[in-house]
Length: 179
Image (cartoon, rainbow, N blue to C red):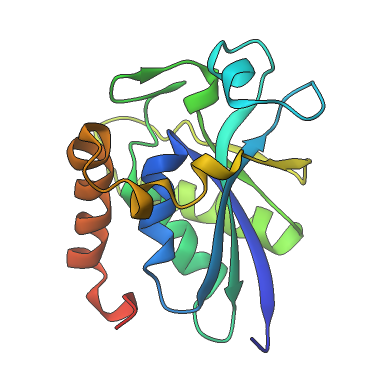
């Protein structure tokens, strides 16, 4: 990996966002975790109550010479509903909010620009409510949540929600998918 970079997105349940990105060329690691809250070392149980302020997020390690941040950002915006505040499908609460946690000014500028372009083109029937945040502490989730979809493909939630999201991205961005 010659040009290793990090992107952090929150777009609902990390069981659903991890398989979207782990299938992309240039992505070497996708780690589920918690970000954007006010307590140290949160747990899954604590964030599910909505008391810690954290979002379920993913930290993506990628080679920017293979896939750039803007492409990952586009996949992020297409893979979930960025127009619903604190909600993705049946998952409701601030822990399921849509957010980008920018690692530098270039990511911040790219996020602002792409969201403005999507809104101007009226890609969705409503304005995008995705938060654009700066760097915050990312707390890796418990081991059971890492690559959950790969380890539990028969889980009803994975079948109903995660698998269709990953399939949607494979269909729309076939050239980006690892072989």
